[in-house]
Image (cartoon, rainbow, N blue to C red; front, side, top):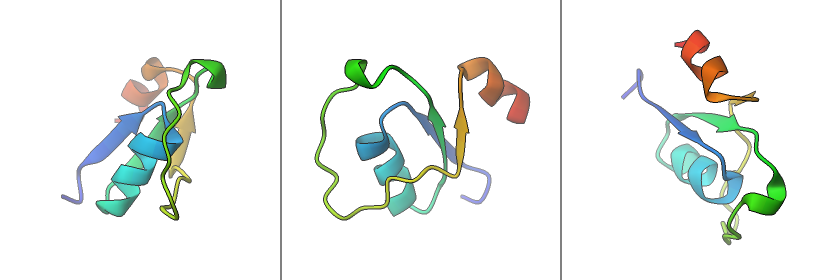
Length: 61
């Protein structure tokens, strides 16, 4: 699993879930008004990497 990452646009669901699973997390920045509200409780919502687009993710891999 050391080569696995999760890419998401919602810190409270995608990033929190990836962090809880021990994965490297990549947040694709989006307009916060277009993200579904989700309660992550006390889970860590800080991504390892933040990018502006999926093209940036591809260049990292």
